[in-house]
Image 1 (cartoon, rainbow, N blue to C red):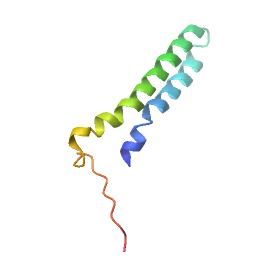
Image 2 (cartoon, rainbow, N blue to C red):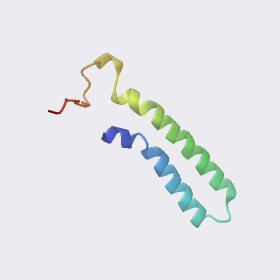
Image 3 (spheres, helix red, strand yellow):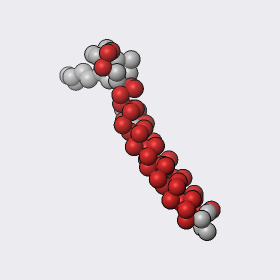
Length: 73
């Protein structure tokens, strides 16, 4: 479950960085653009490659990160 939330940490940190830039760098629109573009790029890369790193195909079905699904009685 925690891995699901970690997958979206990049998008959240990008928005926090953009909000900080809007508040503190009012006269620098080029900096805003660069921060937004690089933040978007890194959040997409993070979302794309984190599941591949966490669940490598070579370790299937015995991953190091285990999600146990057991039926409840």
